[in-house]
Amino acid sequence: MLKDMDFGVYGKGIDGYIHYSLAMDRIQEEEESRKALMDEFDNDEDNLDSDDLDSDDFGSDDFGSDDFGGDDF
Image 1 (tube, helix red, strand yellow):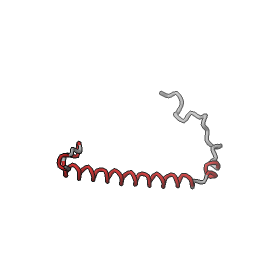
Image 2 (spheres, rainbow, N blue to C red):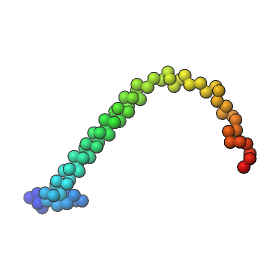
Image 3 (cartoon, helix red, strand yellow):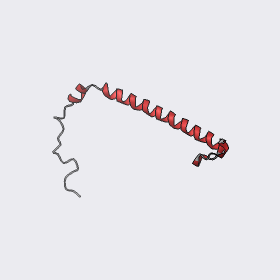
Image 4 (tube, rainbow, N blue to C red):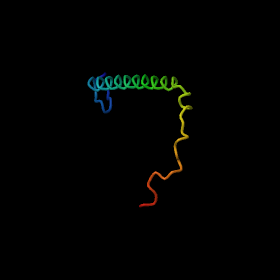
């Protein structure tokens, strides 16, 4: 019965089943790893101190200056 089954790109029969099963296991492991990484990233972002963002002093920056040397093209 298994020998008659077709698993597409993974092949037919027991070989196809084994390749299909291994691929699905690998995909599941990668998805779990990706979720764990995203959870870690989300936790780091939540722990970011927002006071640090408000303390930046941009008063010394001259945004109106021509940093490219004028019209010397």
